[in-house]
Image 1 (cartoon, one colour):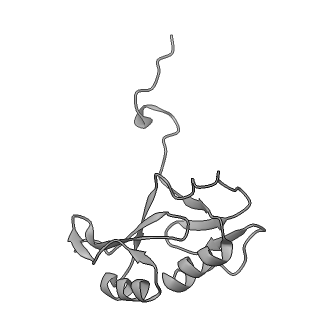
Image 2 (spheres, rainbow, N blue to C red):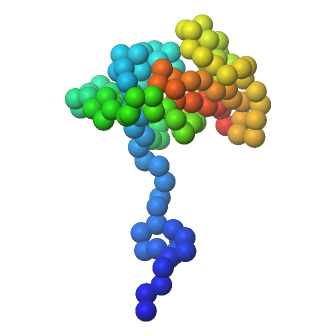
Image 3 (tube, rainbow, N blue to C red):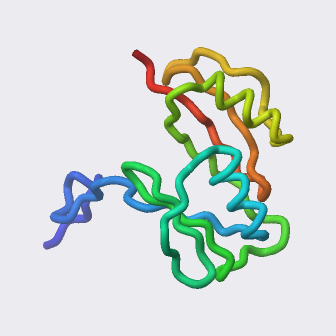
Length: 131
């Protein structure tokens, strides 16, 4: 009689981790400007139709318009954490761009951090790792 696995470590093919992030966006130009220009994430040199690949490390991400979320639902229920070298400098640049930061940077359990909301309402916590 077969047993049901009780955790991923009980399976023969356990999950190894996140290896790609895709965000459904309502306006590619606004989102590309926010992620590439405001946050300084590198755009990949080529992207498939309906997408903008972002060459983040260690996990690539993509902005996509070819799979449109229901109106008003983009950005709900997700907070992405993005590693940065200098939280305070990026916070100044983000707020100067007019993006909505949720307060000033703080020292938290995972390093110095602040949270900003992208044009579709996705929450991004920008942080450096605790030393």
